[in-house]
Each structure stands twice: as structure tokens, then as C-alpha cells.
Length: 74
Picture (tube, rainbow, N blue to C red):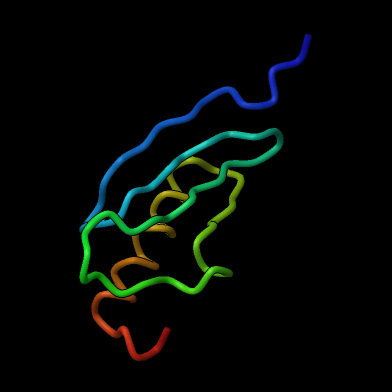
């Protein structure tokens, strides 16, 4: 029996939730808005995928930081 999803964690970052999952062979972070009034991410930018857990989470947080600092770019 093979387990394809070995981990599922949710963390909050600057008013957004990050759902971190591992689905073989890579990590995925789904970004969703928690607080009202926060800029919305475009649907195609709500998922960040990568091979390294820490790097994938870091890229998701950078995407949120950029959105908050420059919402007109998104």
C-alpha cells in the first residue's frame, strides 16, 4: 500500500492560510485568504509547487509579501 500524501499542515502567514501537502514526488502549498480586506491572489497563483519543503513554503510567503506590498501587480 503506497501513501501518496504523507503530510498535510496548515499555517497562517500575514492573513493568508498556507496548506502544505506532500504528494509524491513534490511539495505543494495552497494559498487562501483568511482575513477580509486582503488582496486576492489570481487562481493560477494560489498554488506553489516545488521539490524542497522549505523552499516551496518560502516561495509561497514571498508571493504573499509581493501581493501585499504591490497589489496592483497582481
